[in-house]
Length: 112
Length: 111
Image (cartoon, rainbow over all chains, first blue to last red; front, side, top):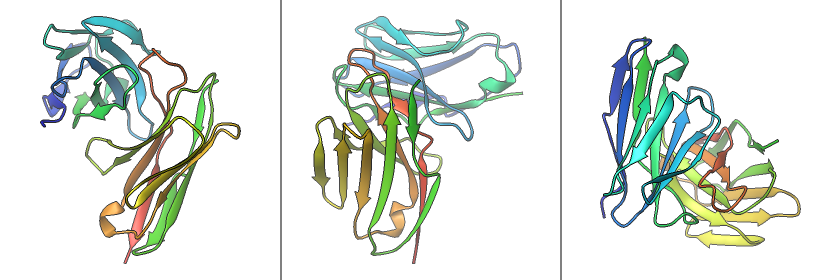
């Protein structure tokens, strides 16, 4: 069974630009979660999508947004990038909302 | 507030047993998860506890006491490949999708 996949692996942007990160969940999983892992910090919950709808968001500004497509894949968009957005962005999926979450390899975003 | 505490670093010897503790203070409780994360890689799911007691899975066991807000991950017969960060995460309420993570414990296994 293929795991959660994310693209790109690395992304370098300059301050003020926009970044788009993509995630494909494990086949059969309908929930997708996004987390930010900044250097030296624990994983911080960003967003949760389930059945195409945003179900919950963490304590992040509105310039962090996303969507979930009919095939359950997801996209995270970060607008007006700031230096402190540099982090590893992890996507996870679960079979349903109460199950364990399985993580993808992440996208390392660097903002210069 | 929401708080998950774990030791920052631990060192143990190959073949030994190590216990990684996690204490939590959250507004609610709907399950505790342990993940392993090797440097530069994704966290991988190890265990899930929602009721008090010990869950055993091969060399790894996880214990939960909800009244004490306490869990531990027990690793037996340590191998060099067990050198990694171990993340404790709590789901504070059902139907939020959100896991609250601790900072992680970096375990170094020495020969």
